[in-house]
Length: 63
Image (cartoon, rainbow, N blue to C red; front, side, top):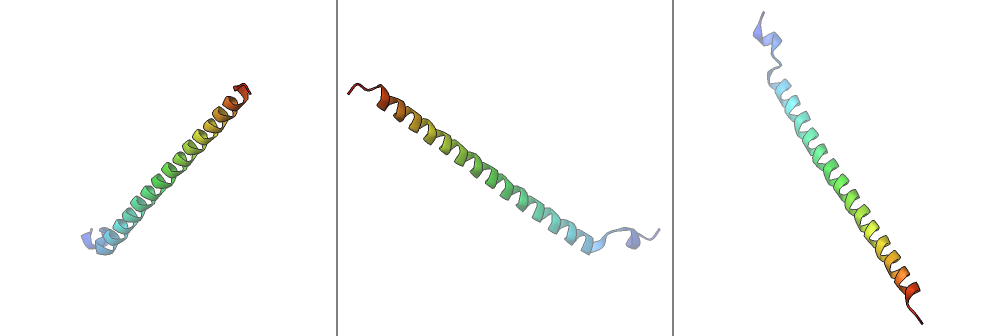
């Protein structure tokens, strides 16, 4: 077998390297988006809890 026919050569390395870099960038972007979504959900839950707490305090106060 001729090794020049079997090996991917420099173009194969360049394409593989490019796909690897794109995959890593996509994973990092996906991680940021998921983290941002979780933070928004936590903030929304905190605000709802504060609204419920302030709503119950106002009802329990004697006038």
